[in-house]
Image (cartoon, rainbow, N blue to C red; front, side, top):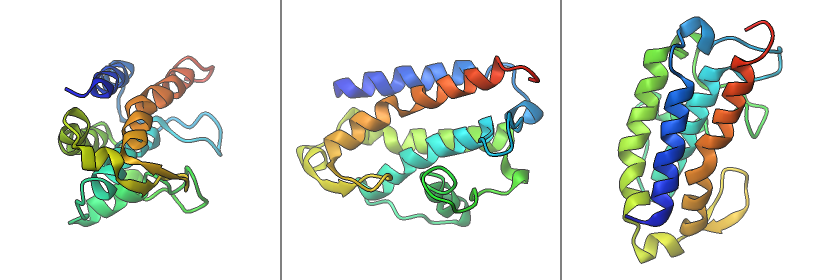
Length: 159
């Protein structure tokens, strides 16, 4: 297994632990009007993984769900577009399905990347040119960044 995959597996486990005991209402708690909810963070994490499945792995979205998921990498996080999923999709089940969907598709890329994939020139969701190796490194730690934000929400007043 590619070493960076171990980091990704660890950060995904920590993300799952941060979700223990949450229900749909907690996933949709908004600390302040302009901040994201836990559900939105979860879709964003899945969206970034799917972004790389698309750009590194060549997988094209095949449904409205997959198109929305791909837009979650950027929309309302890195641009001013509205969050792609409707409120009705921001559930424990919906976010779990999204994270499982991207886990299954991203895992082969990060666990056993080819030399070609590692060297492949791509543009990151934030717009900078990088290679496949850098994409995997960034994605390996991405869930941990948002796990920290989830814990800030969980530990906030009003929770």
